[in-house]
Image 1 (cartoon, helix red, strand yellow):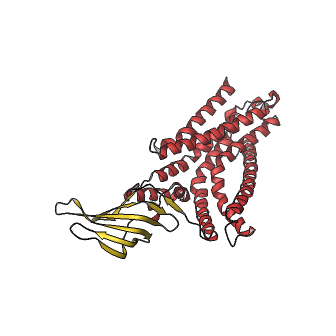
Image 2 (spheres, rainbow, N blue to C red):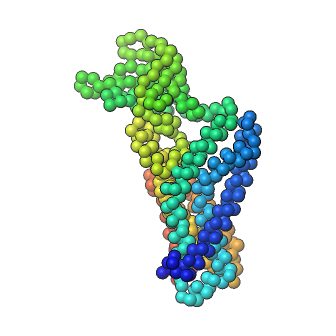
Image 3 (cartoon, rainbow, N blue to C red):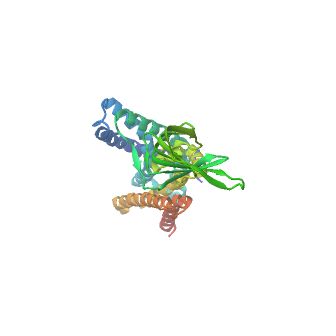
Length: 370
């Protein structure tokens, strides 16, 4: 077995790292150029204080999140580059002549892919999430007057809150993401009766309900209770056990949370009656990162082992790239299906990488052992 401390093992690891580093450098360059142009187009045209330095800072803040997104392709093309180069220089032929099977010299790319896949969720993702949150804040500050309002269907936003002795059901017709406010909100309050059953006590309708630190603040509210006339309230506030991330749940917020905070967000959402599915999908997607990167490394290896003297390197490289994009697209498609509730998040995150890993392994085995 080729170990990191053997001479050949160190050489193969260094060659793989060189390939990954080269592809990472190319991807970083493209990200910086493309995103800087995008920030110039979207922010520079509307921001009063936009200048190249400020736009460059926005691009740098967004870069770690983009690198995390493109990490599977960095592994794919880095592995392909390293093995194609070894193949072109006939080094793989020499290794085979020395009695080494493909499984022996494929160990370094696969091991590095798994190691990077383990480090990405626990180390890269928290940094990327924090910098992306800073990016969103700075971008919002620069773009004056930009509103972030998400409109939901009538009666479709429902939340559950309250205290141990009280239950509150909240309904709203629209959400103001920028100000953490519900629009046209209705609060239904329930308390236990003498039999211990929760019974309706009162309702409050408000034009706007702002969620602050630990409490709701309502404007232009009307209070209604059984057997009493509705009473207008200019402003009213009461405690809340719901945080803003739970109320304003959306896929982008799940992506903005670090791997270490997703479990807490899931528990908070479930306790408040909101959907935790986006958080679950994001959590299992990050947890399956080693599997995804291992599958990408095996796809890259599968198309790189054909002897260079036999030709056909370019079609195989195109085939490897197409296979990687197909895996990435299938993984996104399964995540969308899981978001609709038709597929468990854990299965959606692991099904495509597992299938690709098995197919690539079978292809290599057939090519290597006949």
